[in-house]
Length: 129
Image 1 (cartoon, helix red, strand yellow):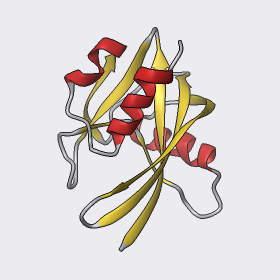
Image 2 (cartoon, rainbow, N blue to C red; image 1 turned 60 degrees about the vertical axis):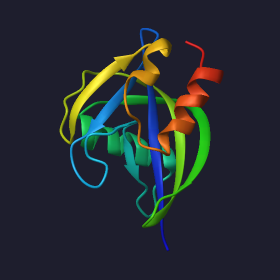
Image 3 (spheres, rainbow, N blue to C red; image 1 turned 135 degrees about the horizontal axis):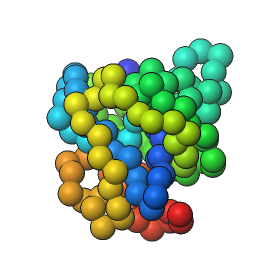
Image 4 (cartoon, helix red, strand yellow; image 1 turned 120 degrees about the vertical axis):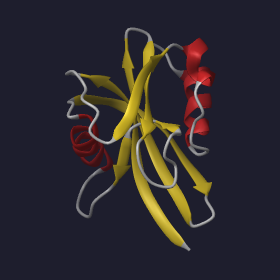
């Protein structure tokens, strides 16, 4: 079974969280926290800053570790580390169909990729702005 090691950004701004809608692949149309694969030699934080630049043409400040989660998909096993981040620039969608800033009350208004639901629950229970 293939294993994927990825990072995801819980980007906060004005008491809202950034959600992005995948524009490609198996999970096209579902919502996720932006991020991606960790490359060899990178720290998780370095990978996250690089991925956000590649996906959103944006700069972030990685504030703190939020949670690790694991999820078994039919074709691979996912290990994801999530970090709370602050946006330091505007965003430009390079790989996603859409982006929304969601308040805590709006987090359930989009259809999340299965693994990301654990991060949504973390936000509801633990996030402070």
